[in-house]
Amino acid sequence: MTTDFWNFSLALYARPGVADYCLHLQDETGANVNLMLLCCWAGQRGMAMDADTLAAAIAAIAGWETQVLRPLRARRRAAGVAPAEKRRLRAAELRAEQHAQALLLRALADSGFAHLRAAAGAAGVRANLRAYGKVLCVPLGCDDPLTVQCLTLIAHKPSRGIGAQPGASEPKSRKSNR
Image 1 (cartoon, one colour):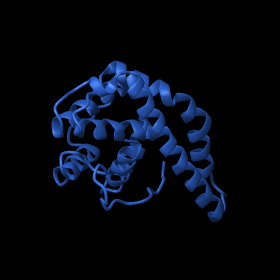
Image 2 (tube, helix red, strand yellow):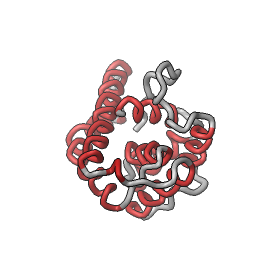
Image 3 (cartoon, one colour):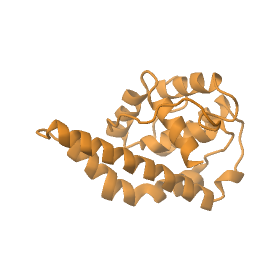
């Protein structure tokens, strides 16, 4: 399941406007990009993200975000970092992002997340993003680039979702601009 979520995230994050939109929300509102991607991934599979589930997810990655991801991101974004060092930091940041996704999935499994069912596809994606938007006090799940591109992406994939099929052709890495 971790690979499915990662592959879905890579494909969605690479869609036009998604990275810029997610990074804007991250920088301006404190939104967590992996949580937004999780809302989309889970929604397209018919898994609901309620307030308790989101709280468990946020708690699961809080320490990792504070101690690992934010320092890596800050160092990579700092002025005067040599190009070779930026590449090394970007690679480390991507590995840390992938670990954060594994932490999210583990916490959600522990919280009974898999038993929360909602409409799959567009309705599930919108509902999950709206739920996370309420936590952030930011409207999500409407006509923003993340929602639009996610719905476009899943409209062209089988119902099992991206990454669920052996041999699916997906990008192998995501440029980390976070």
